[in-house]
Structure formats: structure tokens, C-alpha cells
Image (cartoon, rainbow, N blue to C red; front, side):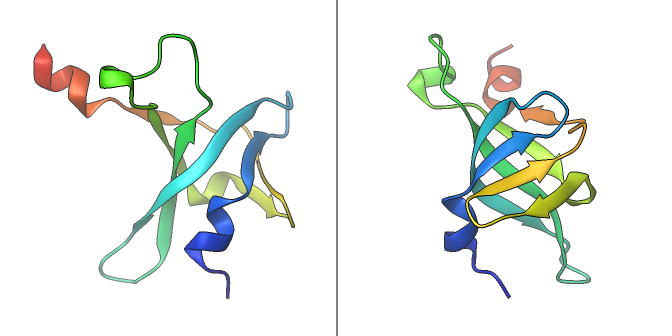
Amino acid sequence: MIKLSELQIKEVIVISDGSRLGHISDLEIDANTGRVTALIIYMKEKKSGGLFGKPEEMEIPWNKIETIGSDVILIRNPGITALIEEQQFFE
């Protein structure tokens, strides 16, 4: 079994193009089964940053993970969803 703190130090990388997405900030867990359903990651910082200077977060479904290595997590075609709740709040 792996701990969240061990996952958080691994960088998430897309296999198809080698892009580095960032690091895990949290996990999404199905309350009924207790299984992890998605990774929530901080996106690599860009010049603009997120709202109020916070890094933006993304959700990656668990079934997109190809492998969890010693220092990286490899995902295939992420089909990621940006978590932009703050922007919806201010619209």
C-alpha cells in the first residue's frame, strides 16, 4: 500500500508527449467503495497562475494511470478536467 505523502512527491507525466503536469495535491475517493477514483494535481506553474496566485488544480481519473514509478506517475491521454470552481463563482 502506498501513502498519499509518498504519491505527493512524484511528478505526473503524460506518456504520449512527455509533458509534465505537476504534483498530486489530493485524492478523490468513492465514499461507497473506499476506492480512489481520481488524482487531484497542482498544475505546473505558469506565468499567470491561478486565481489569487494559487496554482490551478486538475482532476485525472484513476483509470488513466499507466504506472506509478519510484519518482514519477505516468498517465496516458489524460482527459483531464480543470477544477476552476473559483472562476465559476465570480462569473
